[in-house]
Length: 610
Image 1: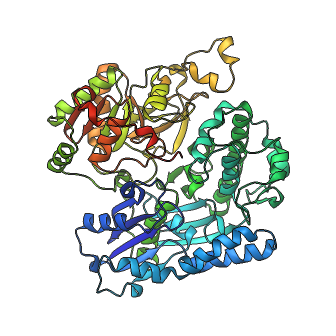
Image 2 (image 1 turned 180 degrees about the vertical axis):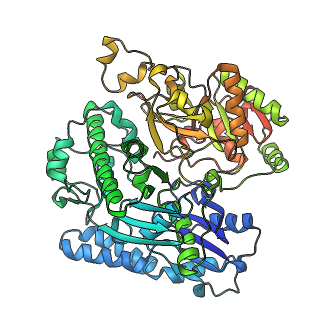
Image 3 (image 1 turned 60 degrees about the horizontal axis):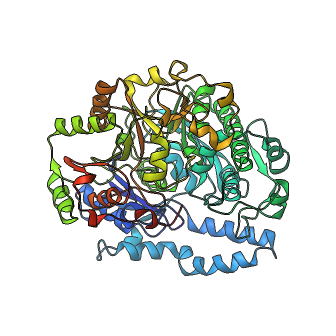
């Protein structure tokens, strides 16, 4: 049985294909269209999934959309009616789009799918899953657990914003929900907006900013904005928010509570913004801890699966793991709406079609390497047509050359194997560097990524060495757990250094691997496994042989505002538009100084800022 899952038309459109329970392919539309968070119908992602499966589109048994548009429209109407006459401007903007497209989504999807097989009546193959059930399915069914509690936390689906489910075998049942407008995700997004970052894009920046601040506003948030019960259930005070009916996340009352209007994008960050980030991060962690403890007590489960956009808060995830309410935690790497496409397909396979789920033999996500790959001959053809100058090396020579480049402090563009599904680069489409360098973090931010200087970078570490360098001794293949750098690897700070505030903290090396050590000695860890990514594992092993360090800096292969590169041509353009010094695409090895200088680009202005 072949099932195609689709998410989209709000943000982060994606497609995923499941055949007889196996995840064959999954990809976000943005990687093909080059439009970040592309919300349009994922035609390119669907085409890729069908080609990767080696089938004709007519072979697809069912197509499943990740939520129910009529329920979402019901929520929209009820919300506007509840707040009327407020919100008329927002209502006037939203309703025409719904009446033209989203309300009649079945017809729209069937029409778009005709492009793949004109003779098929696609309306007979279409199914619609519920948003939070799709998220929960994306987390439970690929997990290594026979049974687990499943917690989904996001902005909002149809009505649900938080849900608790239980998965056993092929069965997945939602036990309870918290409904809109009360949303932990939207609370976090409100502070994302207020501190000047883009909603549905900049939440991870807020998380990265939090360690620079103190949670001085946490009590104000608890007193005025959110009422949290002992079991983690909560309600927001909507007097302070505008997202139900307005065109902004917060209102003047929110401004008054925190002492001024929202920060404008690209304005200087102040200590206040850092303290706001630290405060909402602390409140979010507290709510998540209470929800998880309550879920453990209520379900009796020892395993936990997480999905929804809030599950990408890797700082909170690390604290959940350390808390011990659950023995094991597994987080869907595409936890946001893109992952809903995969969850929709899996939910249809096990739920609607009633197929049996075999006993899990491990994580079924294949390292999240579910996107396109390119044969060596095709890579060479594409690079040659783009004007690239390269050498073709054998496998060991490529590893040796790149490991040596890393040890010499060079930034490497690393484009290998299948593309990652989800927002994290995991050694398939990555920019790599030497974590021992005290300047690598600022160089990559300012001269390669063209992004804010405060942003931290993640370490990729050999799984077998993780416990010697970090306060973690479990798998973290998807860069979704934060843990501290090992005490023995830390540098003792002077009194003067400890007195520094805000961004000034960034200038002080804090460990043997300063490029991946955040200002609170934490790191967002990816464990690298020879079974799922042998070439990346071999590269880090080669670097370890030269340096004694089994860790490399890993950041996504893109510049600010650009989706992660998807093709060899994308990789070459990014290479030529940044100060990346070396590029490895398959077995093609490129040095910057050998390229035609006429092909250099002013790349940092090519994309809209995120």
